[in-house]
Length: 510
Ligand SMILES: [Zn+2]
Image (cartoon, rainbow, N blue to C red; front, side):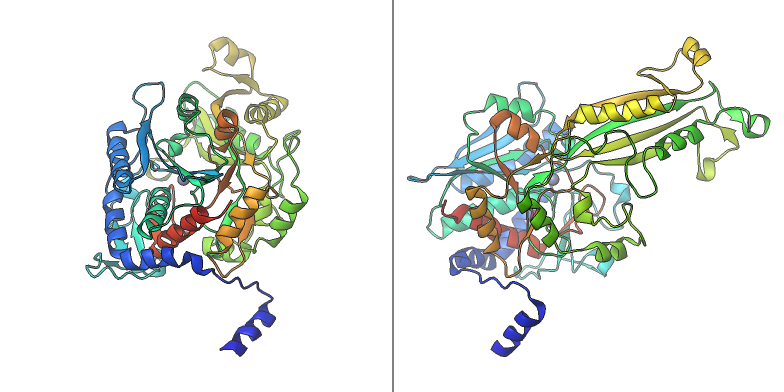
């Protein structure tokens, strides 16, 4: 055995990290309580959790508060916004005598809106179902076992199962593992569970402002998102920002017969696709003037970490059924450290059974701009608008009037999204961060993946502005969890291991 071990070490040049025995109580807790942990989770997943349904969200908040009260967590309460009818965040804390550091654990309990018709046959978003594997890996439906014995590769399918009720749940059970073991956390713990993250955290600003002193801390630990596509654990130091722009190109006032008017009447779909195509070159670089200006360069530590991120490009191309990528020669992890311009959707006329030989009147598109550190969302929107003007368009914010129609051959309505998150990134070199990295590293034999940023967006920017908070993201969900889409699922092993990771963070000596 030993020989094989050393052979492996030499052969692969992989880092092998020993796991400290201090994590044993967490592993024992998870092993001894797997059955009840998962059946209670299934109850949690039965509660619809769309942010736009305050009554439904109240039931989730009640469920979380009941869990916290049962665990003896102090000051359990709802944190409300100033605006009425906003689903509340849930707060609680555990103060440890003599502790020098305060960590706030963040997760969100709302999920993306659902369209049950899009879910696979037999799946309902709010009826958690257990499968022997992922559906696309041949998983089949089985009942929740009465003996409490689960396989790590089994999956629970339900909305919020990975994004992000898994975060709420892993955090609370990590604390329960400490309590059941008769110990105390090494830091003061605060818990903050948001109700509107998937709806853009529209009232988070108000909630933070109303409860500023309660929410002071040394670090926010965000438990959201997936582990690395390689299956290795990762620590993420920031998130991209995000904003949107809606575009509508106008042509004739009424739809026209394509035989009578084709070649003569302007076609808005053609105009729009030409405009959109002018925004990116063949190599995937955005050609809008100054688009990549303002970007804060990566530090030497961040560049080094990025170089060491395992490449998953070939694996992902195979998994997704694509032969090429948009930015030739730029890896997935490098590409998310650049601002991006994405077409979320285009619409004009009808296709399929409703298709007709017509020249449509309008064509619309929604652009999604992802931002990196240094970008300001409204400035980035303005660069796009300036580019549109430079292509000869008359830009308006309303339906064009007859006078405008008579005067301008190229008319577009541009509605920049009023909201946007700017990107945020915490330095990897801070001492507190070094300890957090070590705590996560202690839970795995594989070398951790350290990502300067995640591809998605989180309200880190608001935390920074309101509380001057430092943030770090420790994701636990499987990468193929279908978050935000139909058939969302969590791998059992990821949920249970998430408890151990959160435990390690709560126990790290600061
Ligand atoms: Zn999330």
